[in-house]
Image (cartoon, rainbow, N blue to C red):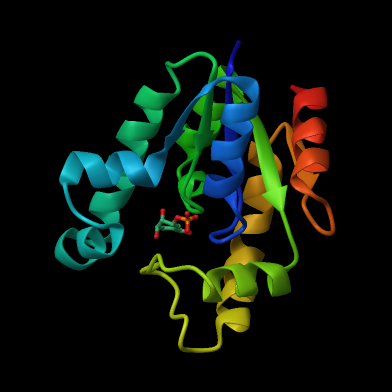
Amino acid sequence: MKAIVLIGMSGVGKTVKGKKLAKKLNFDFVDTDELIIEKNKMSIEDIFIRFGEEYFRKEEKEVFKRALTKKNCVISTGGGIILDKDNITLMRSEAVVFFLYDTLDNICNNLKNSHIKRPLLNTKGDLFSQLSNMSILREKLYINACHFKIDLTNKNDETIFNEIIDNY
Ligand code: S3P
C-alpha cells in the first residue's frame, strides 16, 4: 500500500495523529522533522540557528524523498514541506496525501501547549496573527498538494482516522 502523507499547518497535530494512525493501521511511522534531527544530531531550532532555513529545506527534501520510498507507512511532515514544488509533485504521485485542517484558534492553543520550539513562530508574540499570515500564504498550497482535506474541527480521533481510512 502507498504511504500516507499528512500535511498541514505547524501545530495542527500531524505528528500526534500520524503516530496513532500508524498504530491503528499497523504501519510504520516517520516524521520528517524527527528524521532531520536524527541525521543532524541537532534540534530543528539549532539547525535553523546554525545553518539557516535554506539548509533545513534541503535536508527536509532529502529525508522526505527517502521516506516516500516506503510502503505501508504514515509520513508526518513539517508545515513547510509544500514550499518546494518537487515535494508536492512527488507526494502526489508516490503517496496518498491528506491535508489536516483546523481552525487557527485550535492551532494556536496546540502550539501554546507544545514544548517544541518552532523557529518560524514566536509563541510569545501575537501567535494568531503570525499563523494567520502563514496560512494565507500556505492554504492554497496545502489544497493543491492534497488528495483529501480532513477537517479536524470538533471531531474525535476515531472519526478522523475513519475518514482518512475510508478515502485511502
Ligand atoms: C515548519 C514547521 C515545523 C518544522 C520547521 C518549519 C514550517 O514543523 O518543520 O520548524 O515551515 O511551518 P511542524 O509543522 O511540525 O511544526
